Length: 303
Image 1 (cartoon, rainbow, N blue to C red):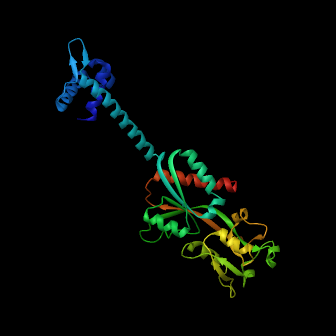
Image 2: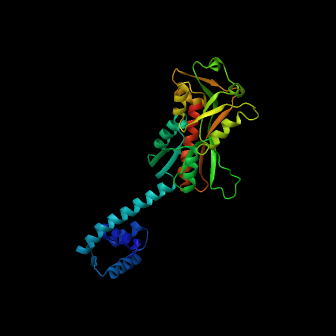
Image 3: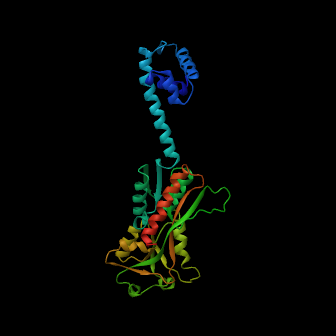
C-alpha cells in the first residue's frame, strides 16, 4: 500500500465520482481507476461499489476513508513540523551562560528568542566558561555564552567557533574605606600588594588570563588571598573588607554601599563570546539565537 494510492482512494471516496476525483488530482480517469483497483487487490477488500451511473462506498470503504483521512492529516502535520524544524521555527535549543551575562545580554536575548521562536523549547544552564566549553565538546549544549574564552580556531580539528557579542570595561571593586576608593580611575600598578579575590583558572581560564595580564611586567603584583567561583561571593569578601576584586563594569548593578567601583586606567575590557559547534545540530536555530544575542547587545549599548 502506497500513500499515493491512499490519496487517490480518498479523493474518489470524498467525491463518489471518478471523473471529479481525477480532475481534483489533476490526472486522467483511467489510471486513477487502475490505482484504486490495485489498492483493493493489495488489501484484499472491496472498497467501492461501481455501476455505470454511480460509485458508493462499502462498509470497508467507509472505514478506510475515515482512517486514511486521519493518516494523511498526520503526514501533512509531520511534513509541516519538519519544515518548521529545518527553518529553525521549532525544536529544542540549549544554551549555557556565565552569571555575569545576567546583567547585560541574557535578559534581552531570552526575551527576543522566545518572541521570535515561540515553538522552540529554550533551556538555559548557568555554568562557568570552562564548564560550557566541556559540555559543548560533549554535545550537551548547543551554544555557550562565555567570558574571555575563545577556542583556538587554528588548532587542528577544532570543533568549536566563537563570536564576540558584548564588550565592557573592567573595574576594581574596593571596600568603601580603601585609600584607592576616592580615585577617578586606578592603574593596575596601584594595586600592587593589595589582597585580591580571584577566580579558579580551571573553570575560568580566559578571564583569569585577562586579569593576570593586567599585571604583566610588574615586579610587585597583588596577592591572591581567596579564589571564588561566583562574583557575588567575591563581592561579599570585598564588602567584608577582605580585599579587592576585578570584575566587568556591569557588576555595578550588584554592589552595596559598602563597595566602591572604580574603572581601571587604560580602559581594559572583558568580552562575552558566543561559542558553538562548527557543525551545529540545527544551523537555523543557532543562527537565530546569535541574531538575538547581537540584537540584545545592541539594546544594552544603545547602538
